[in-house]
Image 1 (cartoon, rainbow, N blue to C red):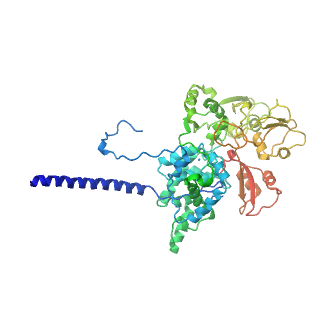
Image 2 (cartoon, rainbow, N blue to C red; image 1 turned 135 degrees about the horizontal axis):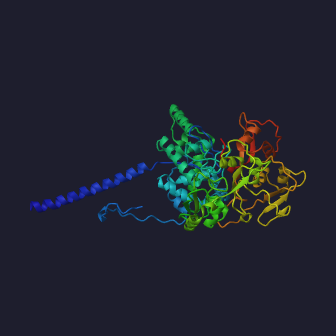
Image 3 (tube, rainbow, N blue to C red; image 1 turned 90 degrees about the vertical axis):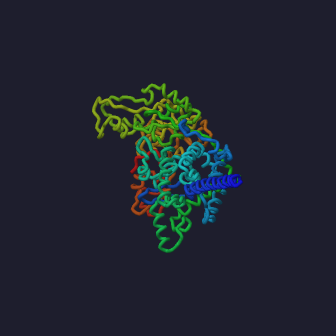
Length: 564
């Protein structure tokens, strides 16, 4: 009797004990998960921004399970409801943002009102984000970082991979040269990793995680430091500590740009998370992979790669904005993004491509009167590339010396020309021929200059020089033929918006003159001419400029990678 009575009681007690253990286990796991998920805050700005170097503060102005796992028994499983599926990536993001605006709702509301009243701006940004956003979201998810960070490029660059700031920050994540190098972003004549979607995303997430650790797991402070520099945020924290004030983001005395930076990100996240997006019509983005990364195992002409992948040359450039020239860097990286549905065909065609067809090279027998400068002009390349390819350390070349010359494989029928070879001499066209694709061929007349021709066609000297692979100070010859592109959107088979003209790498930069600046120093920094700066701003090129003046510059992003 006693046994029969004791056994059920014992079993009942064991059951309660085991139930309590299970509850404790799940509760601990949940607490651990919450502790591992850092509370964060982020920021967004309507204008392209600037990244910061670790060593210097730069303000930001307004992209398997294996078969060896242990056997799992049914009693080991915890059944949870399946995650709701979202076909639209915006809807998915809106349900998974995690950064809190507590303490700063008024500042967030002010930024949100700006976005709501500039819906057209957001639609343009959303169009630009379409090729890259899903990839970036997956990289952030893999690191278990807040998905709010996926919208940080809206603040930094308006999701323009060719964005370039007055602090010379480049790409979706706006890295300056020094910070880019610190995070292993290669930058040379061929390639700029700051504009490479995969490389710059990796570097940006590395940097943000570093800052997150530096500021004890506070994402809002990490984001503020991403904008203005860790030193600026640390100084502001120490100041508040001395004054006995709170040290959270909302109470810090930070630069005006940084004080707006975090609320902007939180505002855009709030807009995306709100049903109907506060009346802003965001174009839907499929919540599924769009890009595939293919290793080409060596240098390849990007036009050839585009042909093998079955896409346009312009699409190839848009998906791979890190490459400055017509071909990939001979020393790598060799990976190219292509649409996922083109991956298999591209890999097959690439494997069948003979090595000598990957990049076309010509040989030139040096003749009397030849110079590296003249050959660079004739072959649409640069002196630096000719020197690198032929192992020339100076500028001297010998009569009958054989030189290796890189040659762009594309034909004029492509209608898209890379940033460094915008068509020079097309002698078989009639003078001043207007073509249906927006291209004009102009025959130089007596007394004309790049400036007068640019004025005649309503374009900029820098653009005219770039399209024709000329220096902005080049002397023209009577009969020389120049190509002018009308500013219009070229039709391509893509679902997303593209910029005007053939792979437009020119960006407008507004530069505020600093103490010690001159027109010459500014022209050198941004690789334009003094005459161009004077022309763009309606000033005399010999005029003294004053600190605080604002100058408009038209900068070719592809020419900035080798800047120091």
